[in-house]
Length: 93
Image 1 (cartoon, rainbow, N blue to C red):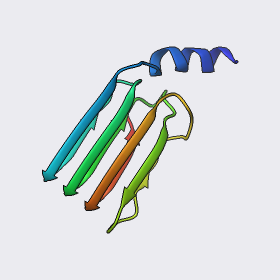
Image 2: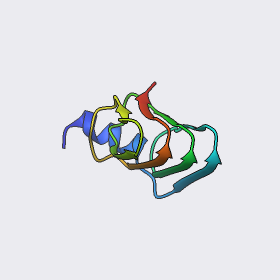
Image 3: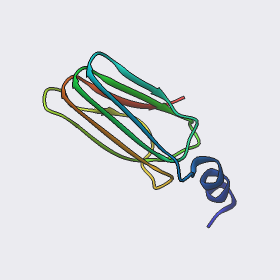
Image 4: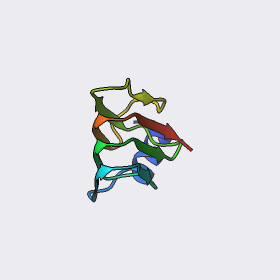
């Protein structure tokens, strides 16, 4: 493992899980990195930002919109986002 990958893994890994759910409205999460992130909305959008140094594995599903995921794919931690009616955005800061 390269030194930069080791540094990224140390700052982006955790065993904590963050869960956010909403019936209606925006679910907004600003993650500091690490741990599993689960976000779910019935009728609303989901917006998640992660540090630029983190490369999460993202699973995003919306029935009405194509997810907008602009973070580099990786295995630092997992993001699961689901909404029935709304958009999903996952970006780095």
